[in-house]
Image (cartoon, rainbow, N blue to C red; front, side, top):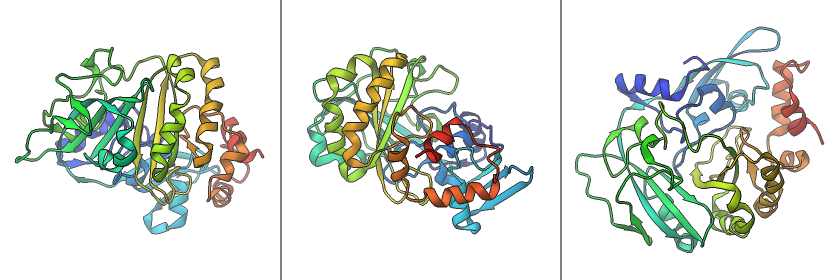
Length: 343
């Protein structure tokens, strides 16, 4: 596919020809190249981020040469996929496909956070892709979205999931917003690309005007990390729309936050209050510091560059790879300079 292709445009074409991708993010509006360059992800303990579905990449390096790398190129390929735009201009990506399939999703309401202490793995494994939504009030998970592959012999959904009750209507992750922009729920079967994202391609996603931040911690610390963030509820709840908790399988991509470790991702959709949010992020990062949290590359964070760099095992190797394809820093920018090159 061409790098600028959006998943929401690609997915129907694949389905019509009998194919599917392994996973999609919550928004289908994002480009393939941008998603993979930043390790953007969906959810599922057995699902890697979108970058893990790449088997070959084509980009133009600083000398204007076309470079092609594939899985047969080994370590170099693993370094280039989550490339942050640092190696060159990505022009094409080759994606791994599988036969198309149908999915269904159910939403459960009001899961006590306490239920996650002993049952986090069971809850997050209750479907192909599972998301928890919370506004951090009353130690409650507002909604649990469970997306599963649909089969002809499917039985009805269980009425209760570890204390959460099955919803009786379609819901938006932010419950006081109408669900018309959301993908179909209530167990109605449909193509994978119409169930795996939370939002429909042709509509405004999420809350619209918003800010986003997200941090990854190893999955063994999932409940502790959630409880650490919950301690900030009085400070953060007034300024957010919703938080989403997801799981992502480990991978071997050098710059992925899930390099060699399956993670839980703590995502927050903030109200568009830039100064307030940027002042709150250090509080969130301090709470998650004991778990060596890594930020999502494409979302807001306020982490000291030295701290971030200390948590990237393959950073030195990545810098050497960048030097190979861009020896004079033609593709360097403020983001790369600050976060990867400043001490």
